[in-house]
Amino acid sequence: MDTKNITSLTKNKDVIVVGNLSDSYFAIDIADFLEQKTDFSDLIMLKTFANSEFCPRFTAHDEDDYSTIGSTLAGKTVIIVSVHRGHVSRNELAMRNFIIARAAKDNDAKEVILVEPELFYSAQDRGPKRSHGKTNFEREMADLYKFNGQPFTARLYATLLKSSGIDMVVTVHNHSVATHHEYTEIFGENNFVNLFPDSLFNYYIHNSGIVDPANTVLIAPDKGAVDFVSSVARANGTNLPIVIMDKIRTGERKVHMTVAQHSQYPLSFIKDRDIVVLDDMVRTGGTIVACCKLLREYNPRKVIFMTTHFHSSEETKVNLATPAIDEIITTSTLPSILNRDNQGRLRKKMAVLKINKWIASYLNERLNMNVNIEPPLYVENMSDKNPRSSERDKKS
Image (tube, rainbow, N blue to C red; front, side, top):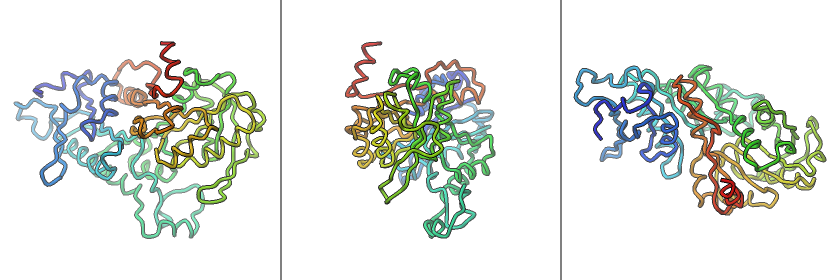
């Protein structure tokens, strides 16, 4: 495609959305919602040399204008969208982020924003020294020893992003106190944006038809989920009741569940009601299954599990196939969950909320782009094996 005056094809020529992979549909959708008229593959070439080294090249300029060499991105905000889809490692994607950001800054971009919904290396949020990770608990010797010989990778990744030219990081529902501290220290309070899907989940609960909102109770599966569940309960001006659970680990993969002493309601309150269990992520599903099995003993009408980040492992799929859970709702922060093979048997009771529109809505507001983005701020995706899929088709 002829790149001459290519930025005139975008609604806002001062904002450029690109991905770190040429087939990143997550990035393409965000660009579309922000009304970027030009495919980002025509704005940046993602080249790899014969020796396997990555070398991107921004092409959003007039090829005949030699006066702008080295400053072709002057005055522009570059948004790099980065998600892990499985066929390219996080290590490679991280390196691509550094190099794309450096290409933007070496060509005078005003601002570079990284959108990484499931922030790389953020789970490695502590190191072997007390200064390696801010926590809300006193780190004892056993906790320090657990990280002995390892790097404090959350700080490393944040530092490398900043050094490469990233000015702002936008992520989704990162629960790590240590990671939040590192990023706010390095990027500043206003330039580390941790988007919480509380209003998104609340909207879905009230508008999807999956539950009766007037007869719904939210469940916090442990004390770590209380703040998020409370935010979902109060979002959009609502006031949903909450039951708080407590867990006691009895082994590496075993937990005992009970209702917390400070719970707003007892377990008997959930009888004949729809209940929604909410958590930030699922890796094995052990805690959630133990929670939902206990809840089932109190005869709720329906049990829904909603989570932001869904790590699709064989253990997760086996555990969550339990009849104790009627449906699973997650988001597309890990886009591989949209693949029916990754859903496995869970596709019969799973729906994925594609959140590209929601993220685009935030960027639209933050950058004053004045694009009209209407709710709902998600696109629901589910297999036709899910009974609700045919019901939804009949209504439409």
